[in-house]
Length: 80
Image 1 (tube, rainbow, N blue to C red):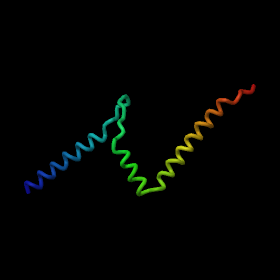
Image 2: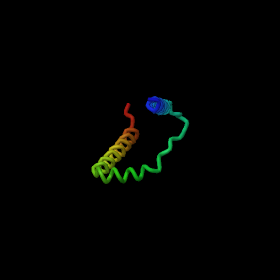
Image 3: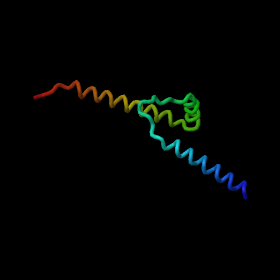
């Protein structure tokens, strides 16, 4: 019975600390690090979901089109 209480207390402390860490406000001035493992995860993503690469290319093309259309609006002469 004493072991059960010890493990239950340990579990509560672990969950409490995880919740406390996860609920912290991020510092806006602090630069966010991108993980070194992201390249490896990208390779796994491409292996298990080949359409994900196509979706990333489409999103990039749409973003590029939005930037171009935004610059065209600025180049139009103002008519009075």
